[in-house]
Length: 448
Image (cartoon, rainbow, N blue to C red):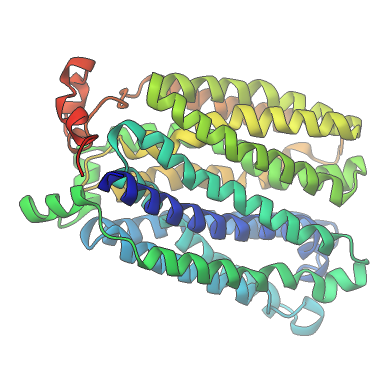
């Protein structure tokens, strides 16, 4: 086994566990925001409780760009590993503490205030997690497997959804009194188990060779953000536009969950099982997407997936509206496991490869979080667009579809990087990449 394969697999495993923790936390918060917090934390808000609860979900996305700037800076200056360990600890502790927040009936306005503070801490941590894990994994992977290895960051996210769904499933079936008093806290406290495992694995990683060489030979950028704005601002904006497809995820996992249970009358357990099944399948299709992107290129796989999401979001809403369980499952798998998995599975490699090693962490973190700011508030915007008509889902689906089309157009304008050697990415030499210019690429596959 080559050194690159071994190091790449360890990095992929660490990214998988980090993604599992981050999106376990994401999904239990999303579930609680849709099903619990309007009754426990915002109990005095009446019909506005759901809107306020969704707003706290979006608050973390305001903090994410701040986390991207700060954590990206240190990730490009002192190294990926240290920053990723800090991300992990911050996310895990914030999640456990959310489970300790008293109800509004007990603490009054202090309850939502504490929720917002801890949600902001989660957001800062998340601002650096996916970008750092993606950069570390791609930089340690063999050149001809970068998208395949990078997909394990997204597989960790899918695993986080599955794990959270399995934990929340029996909790959601509790009587309301038990659910609202202690039941909802259990999933938040349980995250400490994933935190400990992910921390142990991540601490054993080494810094990527390409980063160490750049730091030794050229020195790291004194202010990565300044270099990024000066030399890579087009790539940051392109990445932000490409990542708008992630709105599909927040609409499905937050808005549709509340819409299906409150307006359509589907059981909580039905929607949670639909999410679990779709994400189990996605853990296979995302790696398949990475393999396709390593063979045929990033752009075609990404664009096809975005176009599929734009079409399938209407089908999914229509299926949920019928209340027919089989249709909900089939449409959910088609949207999440097939269409969404294509761009989602390859963006760790596609987005990372847009930047030079000296600004890679900052560039991906900032661009991604600018777009996720839109995705984070999409459920709130969707609730406002739907208005008082509980069946008026068409504007929400159209908003999602339009953003997916923007992502496809932005990807069309990007450089194709799947044949570009790691050391040439983001340097200007990648623009001339061709099959005939990949000698270093081929040599690196036999390195040991």
